[in-house]
Amino acid sequence: MKLIKELIHPELSSREGRTLRRHAARGIVLRDDKILLLFTERYNDFSLPGGGIDQGEDIQVALKRELEEETGARDIQVHAHYGFIEEYRPYWKPDYDLMHMTSHFFVCDIASELAEVRMESHEIANGMKPVWISVNEAMNHNRQVMSRQEKTMGQSIQRETFMLEKISSELVAQPA
Image (cartoon, rainbow, N blue to C red):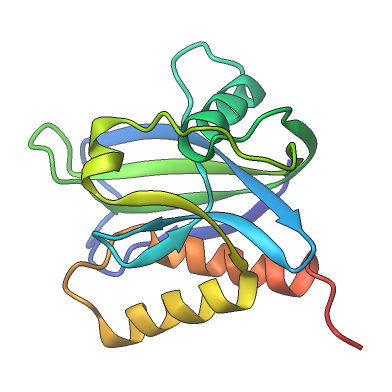
């Protein structure tokens, strides 16, 4: 397993304090010149599908569960662990000062058709939906949101944009 990057949120003053520890699995699903992402209306951003790994849950089982729930993906084949990001950011619940999230990224293939999504209530409320989009289009959109410092900008946009840049340079076939 390869550490891709350590990200420290710009609003985080210290990595000391009461820390909520989370682990997540996220899928990189490429098809031709498109990538399967989630667009979240509330934050106006694109992100890789995936989410939290439950206590005692196998990481690939969690990845497949999250891809199925959020995108309707079926017949998921996990090909390779691409690497992981260690992320530190502020946390808004009173029991903690910060969150330390480890996100594992996996290159996957899925069936050609997506089924119905089974999102959680907060994902529905945030206006989250799966989309096939070019990596560069999604990356440029997120960069613009960050450069405008939109008030609704989510805390994960830094990680997601970094990963889109890495995927663009390392996994997407560039035109000759």
